[in-house]
Image 1 (cartoon, rainbow, N blue to C red):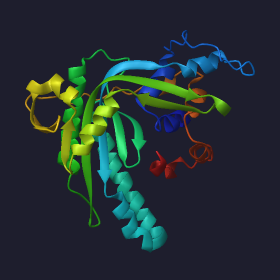
Image 2: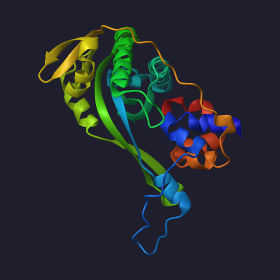
Image 3: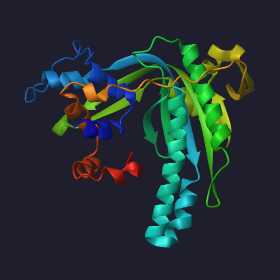
Image 4: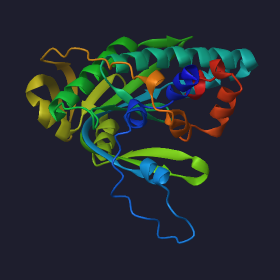
Length: 278
């Protein structure tokens, strides 16, 4: 049972897992459903609660996967295996660096990762979260900016924003759930990312205002290109979550966030083939 928990948990961000491990969820403000044909259960309301917290978001946009797919498409199944090997190897390095800096991968957006620094359980300051995100972004650029996949270069565009996140948990139909992060900081990131070129890390104007004395940067049309940090930022990896000792309801709770295609493979004992779906 603990192995199955670990496998399914590997598809979800820490912020989602924590709420079902601790059971510390305030759903007292969730109103009853206005549709008289459907009555919200206590379990529905527990899922539907909203988290709200200050954070810095690191947006890592990767370019080159389309060219990689096109190059190996003519090789059939062998080409597909090569693409999967490169993708898994690249994302393993990327996610390991994010985890080492205390980041939490919330979502993938096409060939990009949305990473949170800070959550409702932490007591750090927004400035600290921005510095963590910036340090992480700069290290990623340093280590992966020249990644070569059989002659195809994978490049990175990175942006950092800051502000308040609203984490909505939506769904309930057929016990399926989805979490959705929102907030004005995503608008900041969109603007900053538009200015970012390959190999660059940008801070939004607001994120930069929090760390202006701590970074060497260049003002570019309202946002800031970061060259380096002027203060040392130590890595701050997360402690492992106590998944093995989570409540009996944990597995049922988190299964609702996983797609049917992935669950069917996991239930059939084929989880070793699912890395590319994570």
